[in-house]
Amino acid sequence: MESLRIALVDDYEIVLRGLEMMLRSYGDSLEVVELDLNSNVAKPVDLTLYDTFAATPGDREDVHELAANPLAGKVVVYSWDLDETRVKAALANGASGYLSKGLPAARLVRSLYEIHQGKGQVFHGSGSQAKASLGDWPGREEGLTQREAEVLALITQGLSNTEIADRVQLSVNTVKTFIRSCYRRIGVANRSNAILWGFEHGFIPDHKRVAPRQ
Image (cartoon, rainbow, N blue to C red; front, side, top):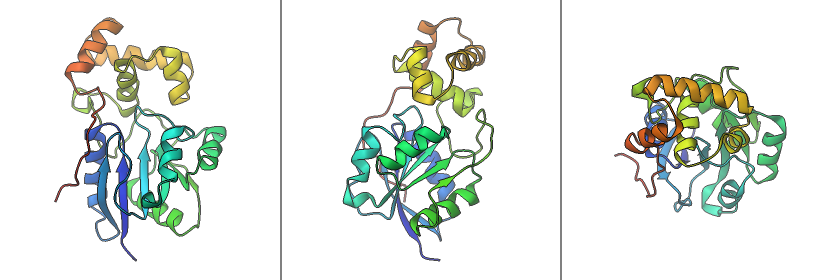
């Protein structure tokens, strides 16, 4: 099996580093050659994996710009949001594939190969949206699930509950449930204190280019 060159895109270094560490276990199959934070791919790769953690979904401008970059290869959206309408919109926006964050690591790697070979576009994983065993995210050491951390990151970025619900394709009531569980885990009582906690614990997006670890 040929080794694929892959770029990872997200706004949070901890998320990118977590994906890099997970994919490193499959180094014979995938070579991570670039990690990008708020920046376009600058080196030729076979695939670009766009992680939607606390970022715009696949049907927005970020993915469109990536897909238009000839260096990015095939752009693959990596998300919890498996709403059929949004998936179709992401593919129409230029994405070549769409992967669920519920996929086990081995299946994730195999799905990337299948997308690269044109054997499929959309790959679903576990139905659970509350937990993920892959990668890393801010607040994990404090006990936050990936979904809770994503909601808290969007709160820290200043989004309202309605805006968060639209971004992550959950109901406002579900978003409120995640917010309450976040507050309990980090020991705060209101939104202002949650934002302050987020500022102090890495929930502000990083704005720099990150080089892959050697």
